[in-house]
Image (cartoon, rainbow, N blue to C red; front, side, top):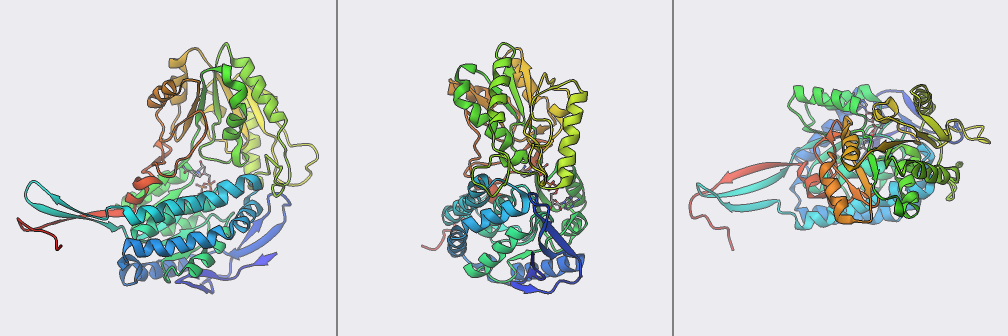
Length: 484
Ligand code: NAD
């Protein structure tokens, strides 16, 4: 067991104010693998002071975007050299299968970082406009100190959707990892130092939700960037609203995959199953509702059931594993609770429904498919956040779109059809922030975020940089010309 007894604040590893610790428990062995300090409000105050000083008088916001891009490029090189370590660390702390972690948990954050390194070099941070009344210089300035609060399911990915654009913009940051996954943030801290990110630009305080609320309400923080559950997002929005603090929220989802033509089903059944069950079903964009026409319903249920029967369940560190354990026993209770609810609601389990045979330890739940699901059932409306799929029949295309939209969420969605133009037409009708035709893709150069209760604001793409910028208009005398 590895004991970390310091916090990364002001560019140094410092002794925490309190004595509490967070134990990191392996979801596979159920053993304690590490401990980190449980940050207190006093630690947050110190972290905010360091971030404030780095923003108000440090070099980072005063460097040119290209200079910041150089440092962030170095960070990317360092992280690239540690991809295997990052993937194994995250798999160890939260149970994501290593074959998913390597790409989704380790490479993907670096790809996001690289995107912002490039964007920082070309983005128009300043623009001279010939306005209605005269010339105006429009400055896009960093919003200030950012409080970033992230969940456990894709910890470094979510961290990077915030850290990369915020740092590219010239902001400084207090980052609160989820208590389940503080270990990847320790790797990140060391990489930040090695890359030459100045002291105090990023400060890391692992803690639970009470200390999280202290970050949200802290007067020294200018903006909150939150990813997590819709329930927590609403609370955070209310707290931030009382102070008119800038806030962006990436929240839950209950996305629908619309299968239009079963003709190609054999081609995309693997992809649909992956899109539903990736990361052990603990993905905000998971396609957890699969919509199939009534005449193709049975063949869709059979094909996906068959695919799920063949999945390898087991040690997440084994590259051959498709489905590992859930993050915590609490999460397993939640998922098992929903499996019971689905049965009580009259849905039919075609595969799974219990704990996998032969796994006497680890927080496993069998990948489970519910057929005979009506969209009004709780298993079709509520985010389960585990390997549980609901297959719902539709009458015609209009009905499929109606069912897809009959949700409080609006994060992602997919359509599966031989006719891509027709797929785009469906995408226009579904009220979600991201959509994919024939696949499940998150494009890092395009905005990502939620309609309805899936969030507020956008990450990724140039829009994800803008969320860390304030606009300032400087009106200038008539006839002003910039120096050559
Ligand atoms: P959670 O909301 O319980 O916790 C997320 C983070 O917020 C943790 O760090 C937690 O300590 C902190 N937190 C919780 N309540 C808080 C409060 N009142 N004030 C301040 N901080 C608080 O969510 P979780 O269980 O860790 O993560 C799963 C959820 O995250 C799912 O709903 C999932 O859909 C969502 N998610 C969304 C996206 C997205 O991009 N939209 C990505 C990943 C996960």
